[in-house]
Length: 400
Length: 56
Image (cartoon, rainbow over all chains, first blue to last red; front, side, top):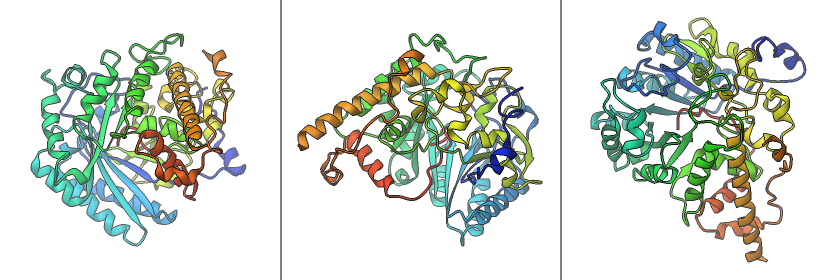
């Protein structure tokens, strides 16, 4: 029996007063293939092969239906703000025309409801001047994936012929970070590689002046552990890597950029809430739409096992509300109730939130486990807590 | 590792002794910006949701 699919009592939760959080973030996969062949990609290189059976690109008809379903959901739940993230594969392979069609249609459909924001998450290779001009005109913010300096990035993020992508992405980032496109520059995503120096990685990303960035842990779980993770918890190599990066970021006299993971941990430690599914217990209010209109919980679940992200729902036949009662969606909205006994008894559970959901998976029993990065998150959170306590004590002393 | 976690507190950082009105005079360090953020968000009624990690 696998948790949550076989064991989470959704009718019981609803009868007990649980009310699903409406989706406010819609991840739309406008293209299902990629022009890079990154060796760690959760879509193409891990447990799931669903992408092989899906259309390469989202059809215009499906895109129109996605827009109508988003508007239907926003109207039904009186949402004054929703966000659409164009994703892939590499979303720019779908062409800017499809993005223009969807942004225009959604703005018209939601004009009476409130605001809709658009972001595209790209590998940057196709971000030339005309594409940037189009995205800027459409008001679509641009996030780019880059793993650090040339050596670090090109170790993993390569073209199918084997060449590295850093030069092409760096050229795109120089355009994106300058006027007149700076306003649509959303930031950078970087996957942690233990072989790369953390401070060098952070500083090499800073060279492109991102307004914000984030460090992502490589996908893996208890059955298929991430590279280099210490399952005994004794050495916590990812935690130590992140601590070095945190100290460099936090120690700057003037903050040079936002780092989402660090910022959210700090915010939760100070009594706030996390705005990312990586940490904390805030409800996940996002849904993924694949190129054929299929609804998926969160596509990184594909790193766990074949079909793990699927819901058997499709925008052609189902409203988004149908997904709100799916056990795996509910599991990411019930906070501490979704945690296993070990996590529930842990004093930092409100900060780490059990870790990123896909990283908790163990074959045979599912997702009610602590994160495979538990030890790493623990040392990182304790380190950040200690730095905050020291500095707050100093602040109190100065103000006394 | 798990045994060590038991000494952590759930109320991890106490802001009660910080005069929040003075935060506006803080610098633009990550700590100062974090204090301003948490102070601002405490006054907001909106629900915080967990956003998609594979986009920024």
